[in-house]
Amino acid sequence: MRQLLFLAALILAFGTLTLFLFTYKKDEKRFTNITSRLFTNEMAGSTLNMHYTIAHPEDFGIYDYEPSLPGYSADGSLQGQLATENTLADLRSVHREKLAPSDAYLCRLLTRYLENSLKLSGFSYYSEPLSPSSGMQTQLPILLAEYTFRSKRDVEDYLALLNQTDEYFASLLVYEQEKSGAGLLMPASSLKSVREQCDTIVTKQSLEEGTHFLQTTFEERLQPLLADGSLTETEAQKYCSVNDRLLKTVVLPAYAALGDGLLLLEDESISLTGLGASPQGKEYYEALLVSETGSYRSLTEIQELLTAQFTAEYESIRTLLDSHPTAAQRYADSESVSLPCTNAAQMLADLQERMKGSFPAIPGETVSVTIKPVSKSLENYTAPAYYLTAPLDDTADNVIYINTKKTLTELELYTTLAHEGYPGHLYQTVYRNRHSLNQGDRPVKELLWYGGYLEGWAVYVEFLSYDYASALLQEDNLDEDAVLVQIEKHNRSLQLCLYSLLDIMIHYEDASFSKIAKVLENFGITDSSSATAIYSYIAQEPCNYLKYYLGYLEILSLREEARALWGDSYTDYNFHCFYLDNGPADFLSLKEQLKIFTLP
Image (tube, rainbow, N blue to C red; front, side, top):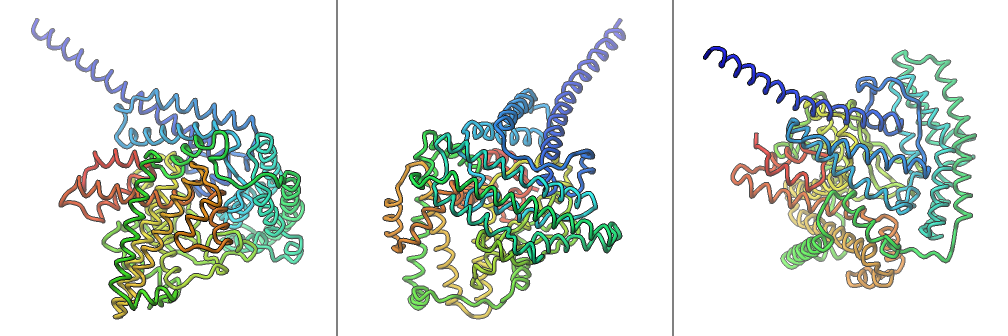
């Protein structure tokens, strides 16, 4: 009898255990299906996005897809909202406590990310895909020019995308027309800037001469396929002919049609204002702020944080100027600092050497970086420098572009290379991608984009590079130059902080140009053209400065919290490992993760 009771208890225990394991596996399987479906659908839906996210789709279960350059449509936007709502419902049905810790964290990240995406989608016509500063009219040709050809399929996909440029721009024009109907159109001055870009980015003359960068880079990108035998000379010539034909018969007319369509929309009565002047502008700005920065602080708290930092930076500058009168005079005379390393290659090498010990090494094979000049036809529309993000599964070769028209001093080039290269975007991307593959992270994580996480890091390490530059100068006994670098560091921070405060004033408090001009005048910016340029840029690019600077301040806050939690075990190396290994993420999730993080 006792034996029977024991067997019954054993069967009951195993039954309970089986049910227990089944319940856990059920949630794991459900989460796997949700994330796999989400990733596959997003990749298959945009070939350009897929190509820059993963180099080899077949390794991620994506074999059959049609090359597509998805444009705007009202129906498509509605379907996108419904798809997001359905995915959110699926994620909320998963019991996070029954997932592995890494999956539970990812589920939390995805849920917050999609919740905010859904919130933003409710503000129809508030986004601006054709911004004069960062619109698709300038971004698309850059992405096309850097579209890597790893196989014949890549070449054919590229040509298929080129053939859809007219439909894509036509859809953006429809969006602008609908914005106009909703009373949310760009002012005539902004539309004129976009039209000028349409007239100059692709010209008939450059295409006839065969000198346009979408012709020359196409031929260059075919060379590796010719070298390894993937293409014959005959095939390469055929592809070049198709590329030329599409540029002349599809792309050039697409830009012309977009410019002509925008001309018809120009309305001189519309003035340039911030989002705060629009009916739902303040609510949209709040949602956009979360999306762009990853910060969940209230606007009041953000303003307090920025104001405190502004005061600290101002006091640092004043202290340095007071204690180093000769350096102060040199700074007043706008004297630039010469660094011992004078070219980009030397600077990148120096940065990589100085970051050792404070940052984890990039796992795997050697990383190469090529410095390229920005195409002359794009110099007026691109930043002083930028790094094109490497795909998850192909990080060996990287490119940093330098805009030679926007001349940089040696110090500016050094700190810019830190921002874009080491320990900035290039390092962060390659480290994260390789670490993610090594850890077996779900590829859906690649869909998460947090401007504050990425650009905040770039600003954070950029300011570290000012300290590196100071150390470099002190090693050559140039102590006064090292002080100048520190003054410049705090001045750069002060400027970014000021522009971030202006962003809130313009877009949330609906501050007028005259009010912003008065604020700038208090800080020595009295030239009316400079004030107009600053106001115009911030009005056209809401949350852009905050994406950089608030992201930076959130990292500083996170670092102080790590110091408090880890005590004597805190090191910059450990903090950098935590930040890199747990991203990309919003800062609320990172703070939650920090509390349960176990030091190695």
